[in-house]
Each structure stands twice: as C-alpha cells, then as structure tokens.
Length: 482
Ligand code: ASP
Ligand code: MG
Image 1 (cartoon, rainbow, N blue to C red):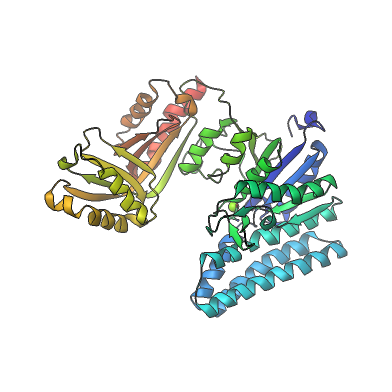
Image 2 (cartoon, rainbow, N blue to C red):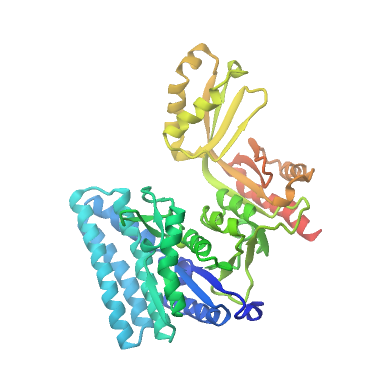
C-alpha cells in the first residue's frame, strides 16, 4: 500500500477492522488474510478486528425472532443456514487437517450454543435484549476463529480473541457503553503478551461484556467502534477499517452517480456524516481516536492499492468547502405552535421531556426567534406516540389556546451538507439555498449547529433525491473544480 513500505519497522502498531463484506465469502476471507499478512511486513504489530460474515447478524436476529414467535421449524432452518454458511468457508479454505479439526471443534461449540439459545428463547417465549446480545455475538465469534485459522494455516501465528475479555461495558444490552479505564487495562493485559510473542490477535468486533461477564454488544455496526477502542487502548499509530467501497464518498452513489471518494476528512466531518445518515462508520468510532489524534483510514478490501479516505484532526481546507451531502429518510416533522408560547419559559423543556419519555431520538430542532413555534424531526415510527405525549403534557396550554396545535408532517427527509471548511465562511448557505431554489425545491425547515460543520434542511421525501443531487452538483462539484 502507498507509502507503507517507507514506514516499515518505524511504525509500531496498526489496528485493522474488516467489515462484513470483507469477510462475507471464502474469497473475501482469503483476500482479507492476504491484506493482514502484507501489513505484517510493514508494521511491528498488527491487531485484527472482524465483523460477522455479511448477512449473519441479520440472520441471527431472524433466528431469535422466529424462535420467540414459536415457529420451531422455521428457526431450525435458519440455524442450519447459518451453520452451512460457515461450514462452507471452512471446507473451501481450510485444507490443513490439524487446523481444520481444531476449528471444527471450536465452531461446533458455537453452533450448539446457537441451537440452545434458540431453544431457550422458544421455550420461554421471551426474547430479552440480553438474550439477543448472546445470539448476535455468535457471528463475530465464529468469524474470528475462521480468520485466525486461515492465518495460522498460511504460516502466521494467530489467536482468536473474544472481546468479552477486553471491552467491559455497562448493562445497556444492544448498545452498551464501554467503561474506559477498566477496558483499557483488560485489553492491555490480554493483548500485549500476544503481541510480544508475535501472535496476531483476531478480535471479535461489536461484542463486549458487562462486569459480570455477561455478553453485551456495542450497537449495529459496532466493530468500527471496537477497532477504535483498541487503537486507543494500545496506543496504535493508525486504525484502518476495511470495507467494500474505495472510501468515504461525497454522496450516496446510488443517488448521485458521479459521487467521488473524499481523500481526506476531519473527525468532525465524519462524525457529522455518521450522525446524518451516511453509513460510513459507527457514530461512536471517532471518540476514542480523536483524543489521541490517531489517523483513521477507510479502505477497500477489494481494491487495496487504492489509498482510501484518511480521517484525522486537521482540516486541510479552511475555505467555504462543503465536503459531502447525506440524507436521512423515514422521518416526521413535529411542530408545536401557538402565539401564547411567546416568552413563556419551559415550553421547549417540557416538549422535549415528553419526547424523551418515549425514548424517541430527536434528529434536528429549530425554533423561530418569534418563539411562536418549535419544530423538530423524529423517526416516523415514533410519530403517534410523540404527538400523544406532547398533547398530554400541554393539555392545559391547549385548552387555553396558548398552544394552537401540535401536528406532524410525515414523509420528510433531512438533507445535510457537511464540511468543516464552512466555518466562518460567509456565503456557503446562500450558495446552498440558491442551488435548491433553482430546482424549486421547497425547504420546510433549516438547522445549522453552532459548530458550523453542517447545514441541514428538511424537505419532503419526494424532493429528497433531487435535493441531494442538486447540492452535489452545484455546491460540491463546483467547489472541487474551483
Ligand atoms: N455484525 C454487526 C452488525 O452487522 C457489527 C458490525 O458489522 O460491525 O451490525
Ligand atoms: Mg457490518
């Protein structure tokens, strides 16, 4: 890979995470092993983090759900399919008899666990978040063993490591929060001896455990976060996440065919992108690396010669640059309006407290300075509950007509233009709104965080794709070609 040879033996530790598609088939896993082996020549130490094979986490969720609904035959079929998918990789890749026998033994234990968990869920007729975490951890646990076995077969000392021994979290099953200092010491104690012995650890991404050792997970897509955490704990020089695209793109290429790879991004920009719907990295990923200023790269397993996207703390362009445009679909805009709200303290606090009681995440807020309305955006599936909650909370104000109405506009999309270069650069929003105006795209609401890393507009779902294309063409492309 570019420049890496120069770093040879100067650089110390590299953490590499391989996402689902990078380990999604025998060919992909073989390619992943090559990449790991190549980087072993360039770095003193390499730590590998793997996701489940693509589709496996979803398949495990399906197993659990059909077990709880009581359909025994269906979950048995689903379990078989998961087993076959892994078995096939073993048969196709592992030719060394000894390695194969050991791997088979390890996998059988996990296949049995999968069956037992399904049976338990089925008999109890109950699926708890804790039970779900035990289920969905299995994909990473199977895969870490397969990747490690292949490295071993290829002559590289390697060991599969359960992140349950490394990353200790609170009890928020399904989206657990790591206890940092405890996890740091556990990780160092477990991995440093392996590295000292030149053994490549292949760690299960996404999976963790609480203080009692019960399995938790870090939220969907959480393997990125695992890699960033390990990078922090082990003082890595860099963290690379391998995926199936050439890097972070200026827009979703399915909507904007001439979207391009962004060579360099700042941590702030990529956090904003993750928050505003670009499926780049797990939203928490940046937090551990930002403090140590560890560069993060997004690279393509199937095009490893391409450098990919580098993410770090320094912004190269301080001009009014917009770097990327994203969209989040499936949203509703809730408006609380009334002339009697003017100057009345506490309306916003009570509104959002009511929303919070339903655990609806608010993606964007905007209030007019006349204080006659507050509007905010939530996922559409929360719409009915949220409207009801606000009406209950504001019952008195509604009868008094201090609040005239609380209403929802469904089928809206947040389109966000991201770029840290827009800070303190006048004219960026004018450019953006001008571009939308040219195509008669109606902007329903606007928000800009005071951090000035992004501007978000709410448009109707029917206008969303065109809004994204228009911003890409008029704002991003023009600026890139300037
Ligand atoms: N396998 C998990 C998921 O699909 C975690 C990951 O891929 O990062 O969400
Ligand atoms: Mg994934």
